[in-house]
Amino acid sequence: MATPCSACHKLLQMGTKIVAVGRNYAAHAKEMGAAIPTEPVLFLKPTSSYLENGGTIEVPHSLESLHPEVELAVVIGRKARDVPEAAAMDYVGGYAVALDMTAREIQASAKAAGLPWTLSKGQDTFTPISSVLPTSMVPDPDNLELWLKVDGETRQKGSTKDTIFKIPFLISHISSMMTLLEGDVILTGNLGLSPMPGKWYSLKGTALQVQVGMVFFLIAFTPPGVGPVKVGQKITAGITGLLDVHFNVEKRRKAESC
Image 1 (cartoon, helix red, strand yellow):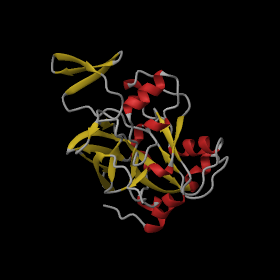
Image 2 (tube, one colour):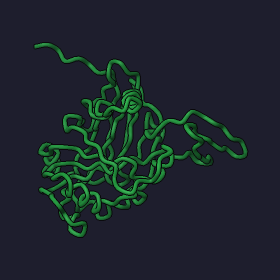
Image 3 (cartoon, rainbow, N blue to C red):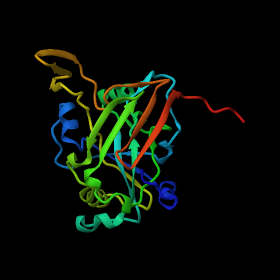
């Protein structure tokens, strides 16, 4: 396993924002029943949602579960504004593995009402993240295997080679609209479903069709995140051969009064 550098990790403490990319894997777009985007779908998360490796992900009091999504995090190394795609990689300070935690019930309710869904993505502990790897340890960020397990069961596994929009384009595109500052993070997208060996998947409206041999099952479709994680469970995730992280899941505790 690679050893993250402390200087790189300090970048996270300097950052002002997390820019997340939605539907950046074709498989993810298909499983949502959505068209493959022609330009990046972006949303913001606050840096107060960061949680360091070994921490506890907090499930809000009104909920019973959250949905985890493993992503490659690109950490910006210096101020970037109107960066040309050809020079974009010069602005990368390092990489990390991160989880985009989603309160699916809050998100669905907000979407149905036509309202923003910041609260479903931006609450405290909703962006668990690893230490930062220097760029020298990640020579090919477009060919990394990401994985996520819940209680030892693989929920997600895939490669960054399958992203629709690559890192140079994302940096150039985002910096053409909002300045990226040192320590800012780009979450490059959710892998989507991880097929189990010997099974075949396809979407039928809002349900998932699974084939095992010659037998078909139609089950309710769970959006990306591949099912909920509940209080008492443990999440592990990582970049194969480079690093891994682990987090417990517990009910949110109210801060004690002074």
